[in-house]
View 1: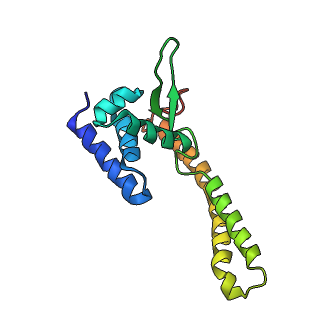
View 2: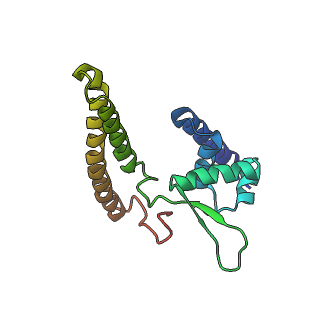
View 3: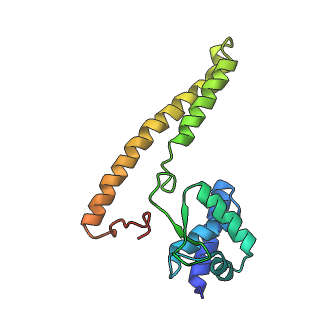
Length: 170
């Protein structure tokens, strides 16, 4: 059974993700609860009970988070139910997914093609959006490398646990 503090934290995460990213609150609640629950792997039924939510709400949030590569499902031999856990091993989970910015740059360039005969003033928004997206792609690669180096230093100093084979869940 979750503690009041765990559920409160999950609710705070739900509000954060709803306000910041316009996600359904259950998406943030699921992230929050999985970050603090006593067993890092939970079934849909366990999550529904803990968060006082329907299984369909949990399943919908889990599908959204799977698409974003934030959670991972697993099943032990002989088990009939998937277990869900946070997976911090992907760039997407860490907020370093450069494909988003590549796609944005491509869309901006597509728009520039539509406006190829327009004045520079008319094209200015898309020119800047394209340049900014390209800049973000370059910077995200650098940020990801810097984070890996910093994380290694924090692990060496004992401030973070080493990564495990379970997809980054520590």
